[in-house]
Amino acid sequence: MLAHAASVAPISPWQLVGAMGLVLAAAAVSMVMKLGLEKRLALSAARTIVQLLLLGYVLSEVFALDAPWAVGAVIAVMIATASHAAVARTSYRYKGVHLTSVITMCLSSLVVATTVTQAIIQVDPWYKAQYVIPMLGMILGNTLTGISLCLDSLLEGLRERRGEVEMMLSLGANRWEAARPFLRASVRKGMIPIINSMMVVGLVSLPGMMTGQIINGGNPPMAARYQIIVMFMIAAACALGCMIIANLSVRKLFNTRDQLLHDAIQKRG
Image (cartoon, rainbow, N blue to C red; front, side, top):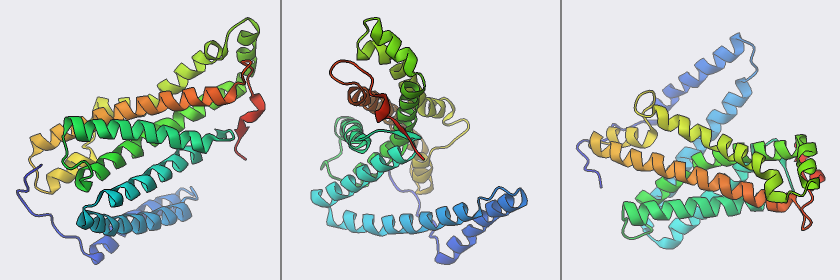
């Protein structure tokens, strides 16, 4: 655990109000350039305030309870929300894609989070909210982006390049052989954001966890070690999540005779 060498500067409600001036500046840019993003900025700012303040109070109660059921309840809500958000960002979908997303999020996030908290950091007890919830949140927040990109790429490829898939099937390929190019391309696309982040971390960007620990008075070298673990766990979760959702989707979109169920892939209206 990081030692706290200094206390965090408190933030008053009035300081939060002052910070809203930054959003107003962004809205002014939108107005000047006629981007039409003012309402979306206002809505996103309002949601940010409500969601984060609510989360702060909820986590205070969860930390105080120090009970596995409370941590489990928060984890369930986080996974359900991330699963929905991953599908909501895609342009294509199919019947049952939400369940596929839930299964993917559960498997990828829980496997990686458990490995990190129990085998690497060795959190004791396992439900210590101070570690488990932030770690899982970082995994889910980044994995849902990768899964969304992967799923969108796969469904678009299978729908728009139906002729190539069916030609390969007619030549004797099975579903996995016909879908392999699209599987590879979609997983690769889902992995690009985290790979790009890892390339510039510490040079262009100072990640949130490391920044938070430093502001909270933590030892910068130790904060860097934690951030390294975070980047690696996100990479693993993204890779695992993209692989799982791509493979589960292929299983859903081909029947037992290895025929592509083209009509099952629907473009969002």
